[in-house]
Image (tube, rainbow, N blue to C red; front, side, top):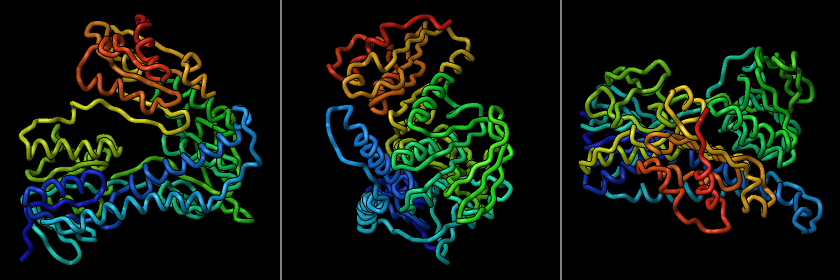
Length: 460
């Protein structure tokens, strides 16, 4: 007979442990199953480790610019083994803390195993069967590796295996010019590697407006990163001395022929669903390979929810945690929160960062609604000027009739924090005047946001 629990949580990313803890705290008997890493991608090979390395790279960058600030230093060198050791220490601290919290939690059983459905409310894990009325999926995602000619014959890295690298690549070739690829590109260029980025689309981060993409490309090229766009027909082969040959065609450059010492594939991610045997639970995948959910993250099978990367609604740490909040408040607090209530919001952690929320300018134009727009270059922001980091600009779009913010794109120093002014404003459903008429503290980046909004003009 299978062992009965009140709830089974499969996957210990950002949603799973928090929901398991909430349920266990209410006295429910909970089984939390995780096959690999507690904390998921964020803690182990995503946000926390990569941003610790971004921090190291920024220190190297600023050290080389010390003379610009009247500070004298000697030659700057980077010890990649120490960079990795620092990153590993930060990750290990997070994992130890999470592990201790879960292992000592009353009413919670933590099982290290791979789980699969054997029925709508039954799973098999570690050779045993378990049942529960409520089952929550938080199995995350993993890197997507295209089937290019020769890719299976050459050593390549993903965002996961990059975390084990403790040497400085002589020439890092990155396939993919979006968030993961660009963060690693700038990071390793600042560490001292030659870096080439190959992007399939006509521009970097193609989901953004062209002016944002162009500004990002200017920033990265200004640091010496080679960027090729409209790249097709990629093929790979091993060369002598451990080098990797990369060939392709680019619309602007014609034939591409590169030799790299390291190859990073940053070509997107896909959900971890294959091993779940979801058909035995009565579930199916959508056309993109995700588990469909409704506005409260319920699947089509009563008593099964899908949170985080597997549902196709965000694939960020903050969206996964918010998924937990939506499920918990609906299930336990009679508080009808909905997926559609949250603004689309994320950051690109190049330096300076891009903060994004809501619609792009292109999307607003496509909607046909009357709108207002304002832009401001970062060189007119005092904080950026005093720090010697004047790259980028701020842009905001507002509905001309409701006066509500439709979207904002902030590319500049500290804009990963400033964007929250707009996120909060949009979530609260307030007009833009709630920000534009508020006194902000000088000198900050945020103080220029009211000035930005006061310069709104009709979108033509």
